[in-house]
Image (cartoon, rainbow, N blue to C red):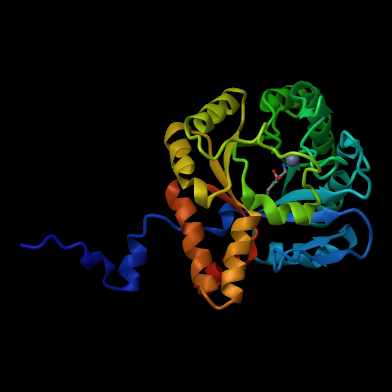
Length: 322
Ligand code: PBG
Ligand code: ZN
């Protein structure tokens, strides 16, 4: 007798019935780049389909997000002025603060997550305060607190610190709690690798370091235990959601974290991952729709509950059609 598993793959109906993993639009978070100024609708060359918008040009994009029932957006700001510490990040009139208020007013049902970092706002492009040519961890924490509190006061629904400073979650949790934001959740970019896959994002957000690299704060791609350790520290400091970033080259980390921690798990399918699919599809070398679904399904299978992805609108459309 042959042991047969093909019986349950015979047709689409049974394949769907026994599918272990499914993509849902509810799991998707769509990143949006908002630039200070007016009349800006600039395509990002290395990320076809993704644009930088000024607030006055954002409505069409957000209408689509609502229409497609994507529940959440992740905001990145591009300020008109930079300085050595990124002080506009905690300015009540800063680009993110203005954006949160505007979006909440016109799209009250959208769940707004804000990226908390400094690299788009500093003239040197690093993720914090520079001292002796290094990003100083503890000086940066003070500014992270100011930025996170300011986002909270402007009405953000969730805070997502991405700078990889030690003690970030504890610092944000304590300042939020002190100011009665006890119910505002934190999604930690806990397991964020120093990755060349961020290349297109740095063009998009004007956030390349002007000297050196981020290897002294982001994780070494060689390390697995260190990633789990970082996640454990952030979980113990009170992170509500943990994140792995990038996604595809780190599916093992997604699975490790899923097995180890009970908090919801997010992963970030980053700009370079998006660009690779777009480039191959443009050349006609891959079937874009199939690749998008397979790729995102693999993150779910690895253990991701939530996926931050520039393909969110495409996926929502594909799921609607099926
Ligand atoms: C900045 C930040 C980066 C991304 C999100 N927040 C890039 C970096 O660390 O340089 C990457 C996102 C992407 O590549 O899509 N702290
Ligand atoms: Zn940064």
